[in-house]
Image (cartoon, rainbow, N blue to C red; front, side, top):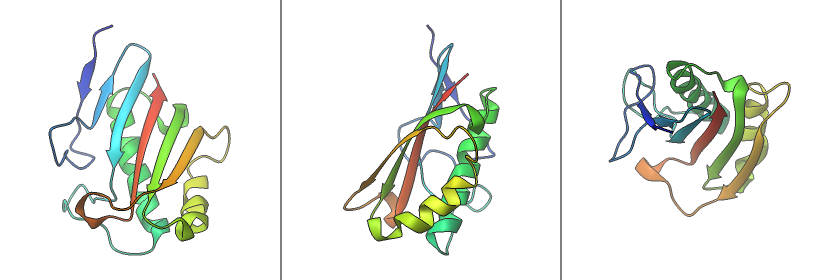
Length: 126
């Protein structure tokens, strides 16, 4: 097993010493993604649903660059600074996983990088 670093300009660049993703022969591990627009490099404004959509689009771009797709996600973890936004996040999230959704954990955290109120990480099959 030789891990391969995955990077694409179709998703935001890492904001620290980590990779967008790391692939093995069978799995892709996508680092926690914030709702950053890859073109501007800035957090998107708007409701949690719009931020969830941006994050999942970013994860999909990283997955595509590794030769897989969001439909092969096996596990996600959603970090929210306010679980009161769970229902709205869940509604947007569900549009990306209409059938066979991955396993998921959702947790409330005190704070996230760049002052974001949501972050999602993902493990996908290759």
